[in-house]
Image (cartoon, rainbow, N blue to C red; front, side, top):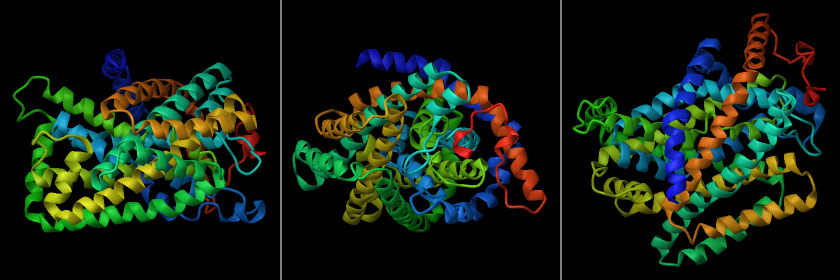
Length: 461
């Protein structure tokens, strides 16, 4: 594991953070800050961007909201509970500030990758499919790069990320019910197999049903805690800002640690630039690619600026962030500080919903890319069985072992994806321009594939 840690730290310190920030600034500038200026459009079209096309295509297609829910299922996971706590534990309160910065800028990156995934999507038997591997193959004309990314996301999301989600969930359930983690992992693996063997439509329905419920419940509880501690909020915000720039830190490297943790755990949570969410974005049946790009930007805001912030505020308002606890244990102590035993039980329910929905969404990302490499029934069945095995493994590994593997996977995926998005960025810029021009003319934007005669746009023909 030492090798994974060393390689991961080198990649994050010298390459990944530079690329994430640089690309996010470049995209924000060229999109004219669309992630902010078009926020009303995002909210307006959250549930109804694809009504007309769906009427003529049939009920087997994936709606824009369902695709959004799948991607949000992956974003809203243990990173929102344990990941935020770890960032604060290692990087201090200032890590929260850098998570916010990356979310605000990273929403532009999320727009870019989701729009490209929609543009280069392909027709499938029951729904569209696509993602970074597909825009690398059909957009960049580099199939080898698509295979590389597909292998990375299968390893990163389809396998190693599942261990983190499973480990956190098994640990929480084991501690609460005094059942060995291995038994919990076995039950979780069986439950996972029951969902994923139902295919993409069962996954889409599951995510569309569970995501709004779990997110709203958590937000309502956090708002209650904020209201109960309203007089302490100004001091907490001041602490976050002061810590972000090292004005209170005695150690010279404190700012760097805060930035590193904020960016790393922010990316693990909202996934902007990592190349995972575009796999879900590509499945939607919508009239114009920009619609899904905007919704994916909204997903970054919902994940980091809302749900991660809820966790951060709960922890910081408890004053327990320096008591030596890490991860989900720290979040649990903070919940119990505010709400007594009810807080512990609520957190247990939140962990189950957040982690399990993420396991299901991560599986879908892995399957999409398995299909890219080998679209044979035996390959899909094998991957589904492997998914059950890695969920089971979560009950037999430590959290730090799992994090070491995931951090390296995130770094490699992000580097590969951002290179492709940069090289294809002209398509997304032109799509946004076309979308805005149609709206100015009072039209419902509809994409015309003739806009890009040089591109292979099989999914739009």
